[in-house]
Amino acid sequence: MARFGSLMILLGCLLILPGRSAARCLNATELQRSQQRLERTSWTFPHVTTPQHAPTCAQVAEMLPKDTAGRSLSPWSYRLDRDDNRFPHEIPVAKCLCEGCIINQREDVNYNSKPVFVWRNVLRKEPCPGDPTRVQVSKEKFKVAVACTCVWPENVRR
Image (tube, rainbow, N blue to C red; front, side, top):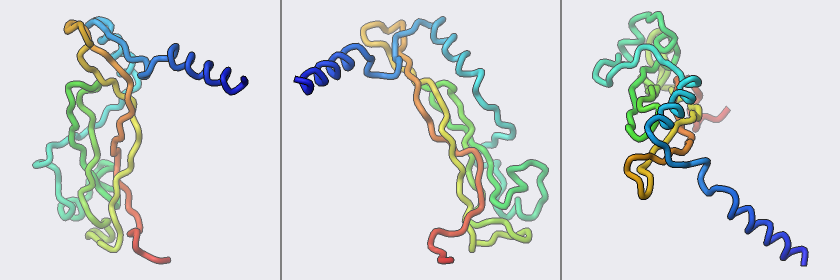
């Protein structure tokens, strides 16, 4: 009998709790308010470059940039990841400029440059079923590379 009671409670919870993480249909004003709430915790990144304007590993090794991304042993640049059905629409993503690491002003491939990731909250919008004037919004986690770091290769035995 206790097993039947537990099953009934579980089924009741499934009926009461929403299947998605608070996804609901919003009009334009409600969508803007949701975006503004999320925007308060958004990050800003300086120096976003297009891939064709990003310096190469060799160029960074020769110069002494002032920004942290360029002075790192694993330098990186940012590119924009764009998705019009996500808010924020554009998210800067770090891209490592070197395979190895900058040691004594040259690339040393005895080490590896690897991206550092964080999870970021974003809003995903989809057309609302049955009402094209509204959108359904749900919160998602988005994995973003924010920098690069220098690491030992995985196959090195110590």
